[in-house]
Each structure stands twice: as structure tokens, then as C-alpha cells.
Amino acid sequence: QVQLVESGGGLVQAGGSLRLSCAASESIFSINDMDWYRQAPGKQREWVAAITRGGSTNYADSVKGRFTISGDNAKKTVYLQMNILKPEDTAVYYCHAIRRIITQEYNYWGQGTQVTVSS
Image (cartoon, rainbow, N blue to C red; front, side, top):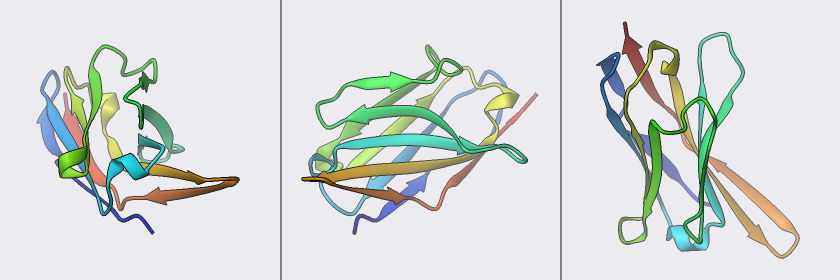
């Protein structure tokens, strides 16, 4: 069982920056992929960014060029650096991890951290 704890959310003005952290209870090298998702009020949860164990990254078009996902295995932490924030980025941000063992896939979620961007 992988425990994920997010932090770093808060209130920021449009154009500002925030860095979210996702601390894992185990080495992130033991996890195949880690992602960030977000859910705005009244909307479905949407995928934001992903990083693989090998360090490959991918981003949703809506955040490409503004957000950067990275990992620090020594700290067992994945980060989401968010720049040039927009009011439409307001959401609860969730960390997600996938561990694959042979044919089994295990999904883990954090509790979420609120990001509010004022105009």
C-alpha cells in the first residue's frame, strides 16, 4: 500500500506560481507512473501531467508550457511546478500512483490539495 500526501496548495493571483508536492511512503522507483489530476467544482476529474519511472513526462494541452512535473527519489517526492496560473486552473489537485506487478495494476490516490487562482 502506497501512501501519498499532497501539499503546497493555496490562494494565488492570476499569473502567479505554486509548487505542489506529493510525498510517497515508498521509493518512487518502486512505482511505475505518477500523475497529477485535478477536479474543479462541478466538473469531472481531469488528468494534468504524468512522469514515468524512467523520467519521461507528458502534459495535458491546457497546461503544456506552464506546468512542469518532476521527481526526487531521495525525498520520495513528485512535484508539480505551476507557472502563469489562470483562474481556470482552480481545482483540487490530486496525486496518483500506478504500480504494476506482473499482470496486476494497483492505483493509489492522495487526499488532494486545493489550488485557488484569483483573477
